[in-house]
Length: 282
Length: 283
Image (cartoon, rainbow over the protein chains, first blue to last red):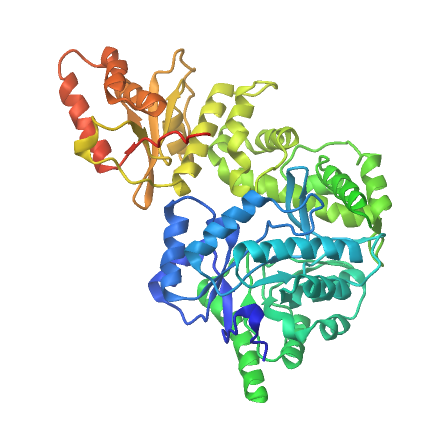
């Protein structure tokens, strides 16, 4: 069972990413969703409807903030002003754990607004781990680091991505948010076996899983989050559950949003796989 | 890889991402076509740092991130300034966004703030633009509309204390002195009605507008010139007595006092007036 100190021993089931067009439906219909993940930066505002909606959803559901801009791998170090915004958000939401990505995105105060991949070396792993330790010390909350999908690899890399992810998590003593879709996307883009990746992950550190849809192209895949989860990703998810045990899972859908009932139907597929794993493990 | 090498890698890659789009990547956007080839430094950066894959060479791999950088920023700005886009036409508007992003690369943690400098950028008039004053004022109004969505709502000043404490305005309230009918143009744009003939810009401004949030909803409202002067003065210095003095020349000789009483009743109901924050002390 991937209920561990990195997810506050959570037994949450399958949640979905909360997106603005769905909020009204969620508040009016109170759908049967185990939990919601919110993009942390969207709620780092001083007032207005985003804050009100967050508070109202939080009254009814567990809410986990997921960041996109901590950039633990940026060579210039963490943006401490951004970390202060995070701390303020945590005071308001009081989540059991939080997460962000193993990537870089800004340099010299300029930002890409993207989750850019890193060269996989022990030195870069140390830099990321130091940043994550500072995040955990500041936020005083379990923190899970997510593997990103990528379209490029670096000449400087001396480790595989899975070795790098495990090294960072061990050095930082943090959790892992394992994005199964991202593993699959990167496996096609870089030509590795996604099962090798999955088997190399320290199971006791996995706090949460992510699922999403992607767009296949001629010889590569773009991680679009704009469609249902692809069949090979469902297969990989089932294998991940077998390896890790039942693990809180989140379905991401960010573009070409379906109706909320359609989103629920997609999440129900994950719930069925998760329930089967609970029965198998139990 | 040493820290200085990682820094060099990240500087080189971000500089490459900030290069203007060319070729097929550009053709996938509403940007005006360009015959410019990708700069050699883009390919050189890709080859210096990246490896090829079975299906993509190094520049092609970097181009996927290059597209994402531009598509994400351009789409975000287009969403923030729909009325400016309608005024200028889509291709000229996107060309303008490209100029803006080249001059003002993203620096904030969220795309929400990407357009913060757009109106000031238009005000610099460093390039030819049809209807420059209209475009600038629409941009200011559309940015105020975004601010009204999620800016703070501070505790209002109690009505009985208005004359006793230094006052300020709610952070979600923006006051605009306009040389054009920006509010009417904006309304027609968001209601998808024809904009009609553009009246020339006046000098000085003759139209005064408040953009604000009231409860859950946002609004744009015309202000009497004296109301604008009064609120602007309060925002600048906080003293009600000084603000009333600033507004007096613009008040009609008759009914002036009644007008002011009515405005304060409305502003109090809307919680626009807040106790002014004391300046932080320094030691």
